Length: 396
View (cartoon, rainbow, N blue to C red):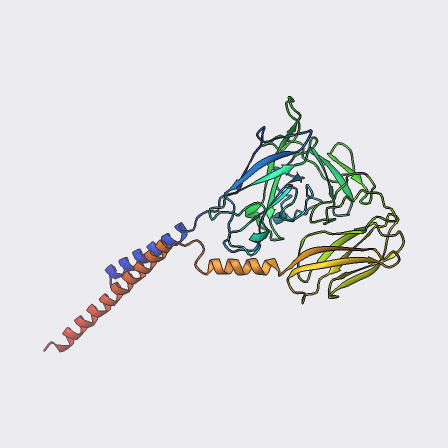
């Protein structure tokens, strides 16, 4: 190949190699701002409603899920080991204020959907814009809240002793490191100068084991008759009934599930209360597609267990019922069965990547033009060489 051709070929390939990397934008870290009547300070004597806004989050058009926005506690606010993408689990590494996943809940939890998502109709916190921005409101009930740990024990978190704040994670079980964040919130009574857990600091972090005093948690029995106890939404009773009401013979039975959205083929945990102590209780999906039991009700009339959802279960709304054999009491709760979110997310990513990871149409056009120029240069050089060879062959 002639020197001029080699020079043009090298220049064209270099241009193509430079354009593609530059066309891939860097993913900015998500940022959250919390604004209330007193900035990022919540009242220690009652509920406070904040405007919570996010920017720089990942937005997947038509993607499954979105972002959950909670108020709660994390065990490592500065290091981030609490994050689900780093192996953090709810009840151990982070806890949040319980609430229903229904659209019209108490405002303690919000669901922000991806644009065009098939779950957008359930969103009560709006939609993530194409640029990764969103805005919603979040209610903080006060400086203390109760949540269940992984062992089922109810613990009280005191945000005046540990660092609490706004937590964002991937919704519907989809782990998304780009959308995980923690923004501290301070608690202060009117006229006071504040307390531990102030915004923008990592002070007051807790080990979260709840077994000793001074770390902001106190341990209570999951079946304690303490008045006003509640269990985390998505982790215990789903009908909104208080779990701390003393058991009586005529009290209606209640049932809750550990999450409102369950992947088909996996297990769902459940708890039941107000059955007759010692009686046998059976649980089943309406339609008889799966069942569990008999379970023996405890001294307070409580039962707990897990139900394996069959892989053939049709996605959609399902109803789970607990029935007491002796008392005849029944309790029912609904939840959403969904297809595997990992598979759904992989399909969305594959569709997105089929157009090239972040390559713009302009970049594609430049590459195509460079390759076309290369083809013309090479073709012209070959044709010229053939003409010279032919002219030498016909000379006398």
